[in-house]
Amino acid sequence: MRLPALPAGWLMQGTAIHVAADAWEQSGRTMPIGDAQEVFRTTWREEMEKADQTAFERSRWLVGGRKKVQNDLVDRYDSGQEQIATYIEYNLADTTLAPYVMPDGSIASEIGFEVEFRGVNVRGYIDVLMQDTTTGEVLVRDIKSGTKVPAVPFQLIVYRLAVLQVLGLDVTWGQFFMTRDGKPTMPIDLTTLDEAWIETWFKRQVQIEEQGLFLPDPGENCRTCGVKPHCPALK
Image 1 (cartoon, rainbow, N blue to C red):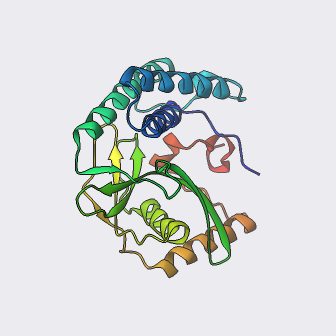
Image 2 (tube, rainbow, N blue to C red; image 1 turned 135 degrees about the vertical axis):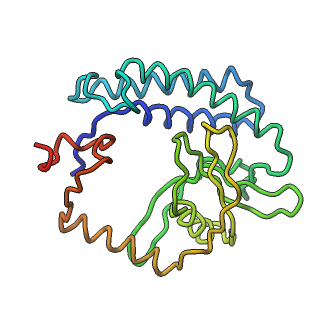
């Protein structure tokens, strides 16, 4: 059973950015910036309503830094709209990459997938598949609204394997689009982890969950942990 987690402004911001970016991509990149920002605002309000329905008062919600909750929410609401505008402006100016068009003619944005790794069903969504306008080479792109680029591109590597299974495309490169920076990272080689290791990782994660082997690891990360109200180490 999934434990109820503390709401966080950065989660609402991330969800709203993804929904707005997908709406713009699905429009064939014709949606005006103002309309995409309205998608962000609508999604933000929906996420706020969901968060307010939890058992946690707003004073307990997680925040970035040492801000008050309300100040954090206002800042993220405003900056999220700015990031959507920057995302659109960057992509319209970039003529080297364009969204990949799926076999059915749809834009390859928010592509749902379900694949199997050593008996473990893995479901997810790929934010965008991009294609080099000169060479035709395809790469996977994940949109990140946080500040840190993942040290290991595990998520992109899983997406690579999913694309291979679902579409039969052997993708070598991927990138994170960092909305706070207003641009993507340099292309990342996604062939650095062995597929067998990925399969083993998923298998072990299932075993850990089935056996309930969740050990507290108190430290700096507790500040941003959504389930810390349930942690025996912090009671």
